[in-house]
Length: 112
Length: 116
Image (cartoon, rainbow over all chains, first blue to last red):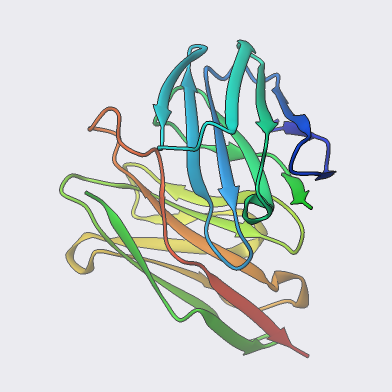
């Protein structure tokens, strides 16, 4: 079972809103990831958590704030986003950082 | 640093024809190689992977890929295309020996169209 669950599937938010994307996995994986994907492009890595600690931050603007409350959950807090932040946000996990990565179905974000 | 090149942003085949999607990589150390598929409006699904051992790797949905070190290639094939294979395919490389590296480096993707 390689299931990574993301909620919500679709989110529309204004530029002054605060919202969060949520991700959950129950595979016992200790590494979790956030990727951003624009249309017709490959996913771009945003953040990596390993054993609940931030391992990689790919110079993402501070209006994106990740949080890893426990080994099964990963959140992405959104605040003061811009229309160009509209994209598919993919959560993923792997047994350890560097192992095979499994992706969720993604959350479609539209910033208006 | 690793990189991945996928030749052809769009490949079109007839139903029942051979599917060949090309992927070349560069890596300073033995790589781990992956193919992911993305159906419209969905996330990425792992098709197959090469880590060590047998260089011909079989994946889901009848796909397979062969790791050729001398050619630095990891091309994806399927003997007979099905309409349901229409999707975006991403080749990716991971360098597990260098900690802190970006976990996966993706190619730009190849969109596969299947014509009835």
